[in-house]
Image (cartoon, rainbow, N blue to C red; front, side, top):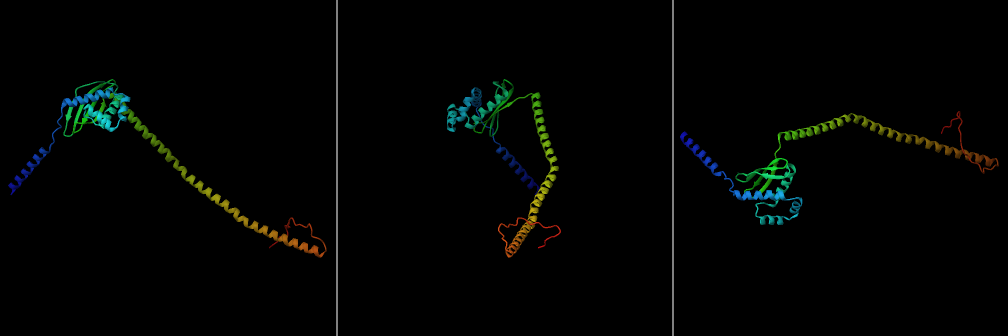
Length: 259
């Protein structure tokens, strides 16, 4: 029984090994001279293209660009060609004018082909990389500038200072903001007291207004009674009440009138 299990396991392992070997894809097959001609053409055209030429390409329709590329017989698509022009412009801004390049290095895989070369520019050297897809059409173009240790350290220092400076500015702003929190309770109390004062001031005149109205009403009644009494008295005495007007009534301090 043990022998049968051992044989079965060996068969399974062998099947798995053969399956893994059979599933391995081969690298892309390509013609080195064709790819070399395409990359040389792209480098020369990108180097000679000025801003007006690039603007004209960007204004063309997709059909016009594809027609131009097909007539030239180059393995480029619209997007990859325009991206190569843009990458070249950015690279020359960083590295200076193009001078020359070395031989190409080809790195094929199962789904792409990488073509790299070391190039010399006016300000610094760089590495140019072209990536072709599984149909050997250009997919991307990159230009990586070479910096020496001093330039790398300088950039790293500037990035560090910028990052730390940003962090300190934010921390200072947060600390100032937190320091203002102590004034919030005083402001809330001030607004609350202000609201209570305004409420009391509005309520006080309303409470005083009622007695004044009552007093005025009582004085009017008293004036009417006194006027009637004087008029009756003058009529009995045979006098006249023409021109008689009661203008004011004054109470004596010792003689308080009660309603």
